View 1 (spheres, rainbow, N blue to C red):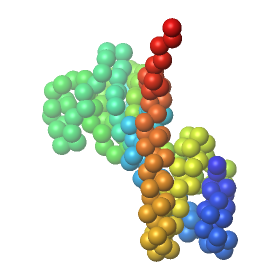
View 2 (cartoon, rainbow, N blue to C red; view 1 turned 180 degrees about the vertical axis):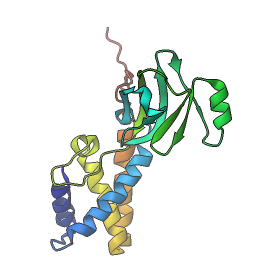
View 3 (cartoon, rainbow, N blue to C red; view 1 turned 30 degrees about the vertical axis):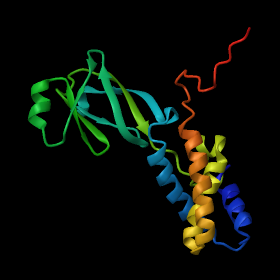
Amino acid sequence: MNRTELVAAVRSYLNRPSLPAADVTIMIQAVEGELNRELREHPRNIRRTTFTLAASNNGLLSMPYDLAQTINLRDDNGNLSQYPADDRQGAENNGHAYIMRGMVAELFPAPTVDTVYTLDYVAFLRGLEGDFDSNWVSTYFSDLYLYGTLKEAAVYLKDDQRLALWQQEFLRRLNGVVGQGWNQNISTAPRVRLG
């Protein structure tokens, strides 16, 4: 389900065909904030990317636009240790470390030759910003977006009776997605003994 389809569904569920799309978009963005918090650990939000850092970059490695949290940064010599931004001396003394400065990793020591780095990280969901945009939640679990947006609409419209219903339904569906364990090679179905 893309944003246009979601706006139409929300208007239909609420029986408010004239509800401004801009208002529904704000509700969708609120749901995306909640999904980014609640689905942060979901395996579908884990990414791996590889960078080649030129020696001329002075040890400054730009991070992906959708970075929510670094998991692991490594080069051919292994994992780099992450230090807090105020511990430059610790990172320099370690000799194989980095400090995050916004969306840039400052590497210690700065590489003197072009170096390949691999980053494992938690990614934010891509927002439904255009009419044809989608992400894994809107594609596979469009009902989660729908009930989350209806929950936000109930807050917006001050509809306390519907708020409890939409909140309950959103949380039930969210718990189903969180509990799926995709890509973990773990079966959650009961085992049946034959014979």
